[in-house]
Image (cartoon, rainbow, N blue to C red; front, side, top):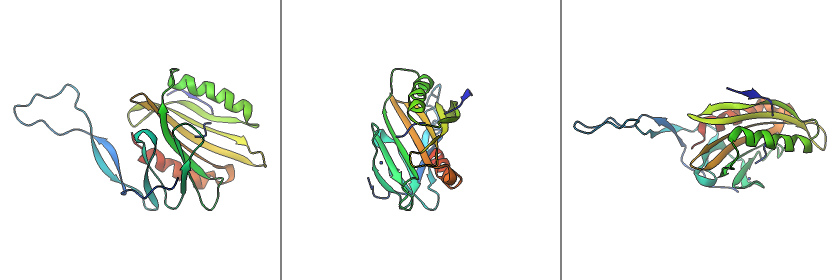
Length: 194
């Protein structure tokens, strides 16, 4: 795992979907007389959504779980949605997927970080590096920066590519409220597919 240090801000009320998510599991065993494929393709196994969360769909087939009651709207980024805490609009998550850029996954986010850091005073990278997300190479990026009205924002995001699409999940909150927002991010990590 390469670990550097680092942001990406990627919001419409959707009906609550069934409280299940899917995890990769081995495919079924072949019946007698069938040939076994060299690499069995995974099937999907339902996993319950945690209490207090609801299933939502995002752009390009992304499915995740957000806290119940959070308001979902289209975000400013391409193919991105935002779910906002109705009691604190400074706490939100973003999720989605758009066609992947030509640049490599890590390289594109290092470039984006340079642009973002220049535009956000007090930017501090906490981490930026590669990891594995649901069996796929991903970039994990966590950072803080100053807010225009005072205080600091903490954000954590994950980016990965599948089928020519770059997907992401992102959570942000005032730094003072990150401890209560981090479990929301962790749920995104656990519940998001593909």
